[in-house]
Amino acid sequence: MQFSSSIRTNLEAFAANMHMPYMPQHDGSLSFALSTSGVLTFTPVKSGNRVAVSLGRRHSDQEVGRIYEPLTRKAGFVPELQNNLHVGISKDNFVYLSVLFEEEQLNQPVLEVTVDHLISELSSL
Image (cartoon, rainbow, N blue to C red; front, side):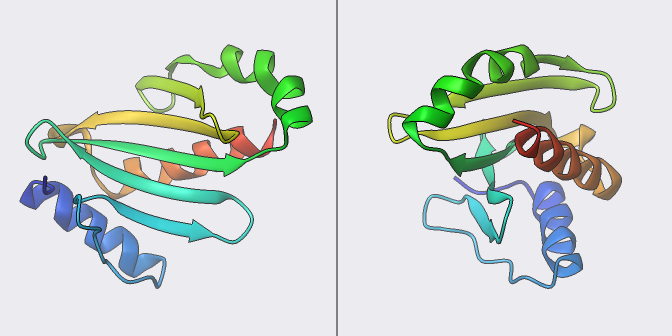
């Protein structure tokens, strides 16, 4: 699946602003390994007209046990994003924060605020 042209244009500009190449994977997703923050991923959803923006970072078993409750409290509507924040933990102890945007909701300021919010929230755990 590929991103819509509008989403792709926003993601290309975002990548350029970060001085990183826009290189989608075979499944259409786009990922950036951020040195201290984790892996930032943009995944096309529903024919590419929606995008999931997620940040994930691996934690130890002990850390996952400690942050489980604070993580679940982060889930829900976030006024500054005008959207819901989703949280999850994978079997291999990656902790994820994610937001789903419709094509018409996405622009450069929204992307920047969202990524900053995900980094801040994940770092606070």
